[in-house]
Length: 321
Image 1 (cartoon, rainbow, N blue to C red):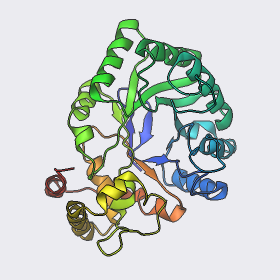
Image 2: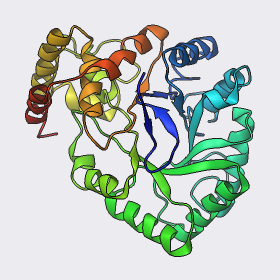
Image 3: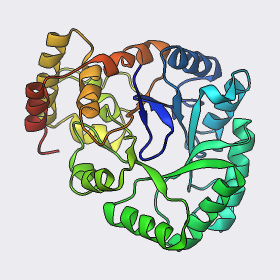
């Protein structure tokens, strides 16, 4: 496994990050434990979760993923794993049960620490913007968490370039800690949102980038074909998949990735991840898995070195996304 600094920090994270949204959803506790063990054995030291995972499932209330990680983490040396979680979504009833106010952040971090059974969070990320809370209030709250030692670094997720830059400016003016990472939606089949302005912003400001959905909700694993547009998948009902399964350009891009797959003798998912890793601003794509077998299909992506010609072929065939 390869490692890289997270943005301008000295924190070294694996070039692949284990996403844990499936924990407590499509992966039960025992399976989740096995996935985390297999990830760590493969050299993945970077795990990403969020307090809201997976509150959308009937019978869940949110915090299920963090709770499972906490039970597993209790039996491991804490320093072996870099834990990233997020705050913003609704976690309790009432007007302050969601958002990025100081009130919500201070309660949410205590709840996450309790579920994770740890006394610090390595990377605490705002899950998406909160237009009703001033940026300086949010950043001041996050700064106090870093100063207290409860959080080591902070990051943003789903921020547009203008808001990311404004956040960095506010942090600079007030001498608060700044966002050291960004978690955007980015893949071969979802490029413009990140590449239009965020890529240049992150390069200029030395922001670590940990993209989510790098396999386009499973489309880039090859499970979706023109003949089988509804394979067994927990993500088949997602809006992204619904946009892709009837898009001939998406299948054409997949054909090119499958052709490159043959040259490297690896699963096509590794080709899609290797394309991301070839981009200079990308630190660590987030890979999700429902089983150990799914994880094992992608962990070798760091060892796949695409030629410049292969990267250009993939760039050209996906330019419309």
